[in-house]
Amino acid sequence: MRYIKLPSENFGKFFKSLGEWGTLYAPVKKGDIYSFQEVHDPAEIALDYTRTMLPPKKFFFRPKEAILRLKNGRWEEEIEAEPTVLFGLHSCDIHGLKILDKVYLNEPADPYYKSRREKTLIIGISCMPDEYCFCKSLGTHFAMEGFDLFLHELPDGWLVRIGSVRGHEMAWENSELFEEVTDEDLANFKEFEEKRAKAFQKELPQEGLADMLDLAYNSPVWKKYAEVCLACGNCNMVCPTCRCYEVCDSWMDAYSSVRERRYDSCFMENHGLVAGGHNFRPTRLDRFRHRYYCKSYFDPTAGYNCVGCGRCDEFCPAKIEHVKVLEEVRGSLQ
Amino acid sequence: MSENPYQTYDARILEVKDLTSREKLFTLRFLDPEVEAKFDFKPGQFVIVDIRGFGEFPISICSSPTRKGYFQLCIRKVGRMTKFVHKMNEGDVVGIRGPYGNGFPMEKMEGSNLILVAGGLGMAPLRSVLWYAIDTGKYENVWLLYGTKAYEDILFRDEIIHLLKHGEAMNCSVKLAYEVESPSCIYLEQGFSDRVCKGVVTDLFRGEEFDVNNTYALICGPPVMYKFVIRELLDRKLSPGRIYMTLERRMRCGVGKCGHCVVGTSVSMKYICQDGPVFTYWDALSTRGLI
Image (cartoon, rainbow over all chains, first blue to last red; front, side):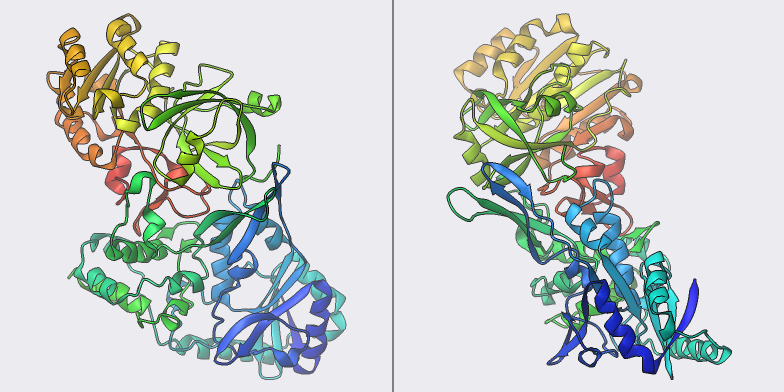
């Protein structure tokens, strides 16, 4: 890793230069909600944001998109990917993209996801946890890869980690804006990280988690929360790693049709439905438990399917807390 | 060929045959000779049928890969899409992509006995195995135990009756169980008293002995059937690793992306479309929700 420093006074110029690499998106505050929006001016962005409602997956795997268009009896593919710069991703979201990569870039790769992923630059930014964050206990609070540049806040600027060749190019072209890192900067970086590590209020103990949950398959805790859950699927929509989709064909006119896919939710009753009306997850309990198992699945190559971003907690209308559910389920074993 | 895994290829319907009042057999062939030449599959694999402008659905291939130049799909009319397909005729064109899934390990099972246990529509994927085994002649003995509702519901009735009569010569013995009595069934039962009976598919195991060290069981049927059939097989001390079953889920993409066929818990998650649809009973023991 190469480390350089971006002094505060050069931030504006650096930010403007990012626009030359592609359409620039960054977190913006609208009402009480943060979201990734197209920006042109550094004054528009909320650098100290907590989390956006929709995670950055929306740039690669769209909430609704046309994948094929029927013209003259043949499907024509519709791949639109423009050079994009995503500025200000938190570490958990970078890990979230890695989990999506595992699925969507795995052969055969999803061409829509892949082309957007290849044309997008990722600039990470350091953050302070709030009451919903539990990324530290999942090891996703710090990103070692998956970004081009990562900015860490210093009292007088930013410590920049360069994570890719394109990241090097971006720094190279603006080399007059950067400085060498001093011992003082390193001390500040260390201090910030230590302060941040202490700021986490929520923890998800990992020891034997996957097995404990599996053993507690019939725990009454699942039932208790399934009764509270509204089955609205909000948690699926805002989750940076949820990626189920449904496909639907619609006619545009008598000769042309479009095949669209859109986010799907495992809380919907028809998610486990098969031909003839048999449902493999007929009750809300089945569906509730399925989501928790899917998020807690541990893949040796990519870790858990949950990155601890806290979105499902913050945006749950029934105020169900992910960590609390898992801890209670685990506790019910004793 | 396109690199887009969601692109489908034109296939012409060569023949449509009524199997029962609900099922039709479609014989298809790709229009593009290059696609046709590349298309190869294993028994137990499935394709996704694309009715352009209406949608897609997964369906298992019911013909054997030993018979070149065409492939067959047995489609039951159950929903909007399949109803539409049932209205199609010879010469019509549909889109096809695939084949997908792992299929049955036919090479691994060579030289062994095969017990095919089919319930209702489960006959369709197992027919591919049946004809593969008969055509290649690489298997010791093949038993087909087929449970059906009524005489009118017997899929591939001509073939089944042909095998009842002449199966022995092909090392293939067929047994049939029906639930609803009818003159035709009674007639069959009189002709093949040792092989046709009223009851469910597990009744066909009665009196059946097999060498557990040299036998594989392959099961396909409605969800409720697996538990009972597996119990019969385990009672006879057949190893769970020798019990293969092919499963159904609502697969949208077929390539492990859309998430509809994901099953399991925090310790073991599987995509039916990529890790399956063929699983052993060991897999079912280690992955909750598989069956």
